Image (cartoon, rainbow, N blue to C red):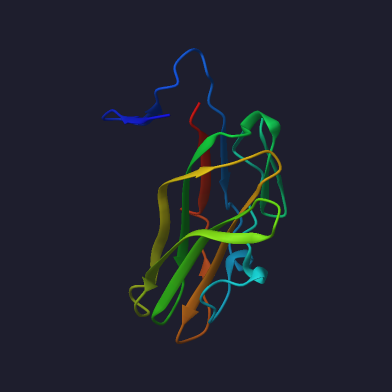
Length: 171
């Protein structure tokens, strides 16, 4: 498969009526569910849990923050985008986000991103993102997003605006 780029989006050269499948998760409730302190890399206790999916096509099931891949997506490539929004930190804070995959032998980190979301009490919002990451999946694989903040002070909370995880199969 070759990935091609036009000015608006990515598409594959598979052709022939293949259909894409998508999942979009967002954090709509504010606060503590995304909070962690002083851990880099994130630990198992900092899995991001999401509200009900905004969009959930066949091939994805979600439970306690873990997405399990169904037979519909076996062997497919997924285009993954993740964004975590930090809010209310009062000191220099680095937010670390990881995408992890379990193919049957336990979770391993596929990609990690970090950013200083907060500098001081006047500059206390920001985002950490993973954009345009490709991962090949098989039936029964599990994916999850881990998050932590590494801070010199007390932990803040994560805002609801801007926290999301989207995946789309490349048909």
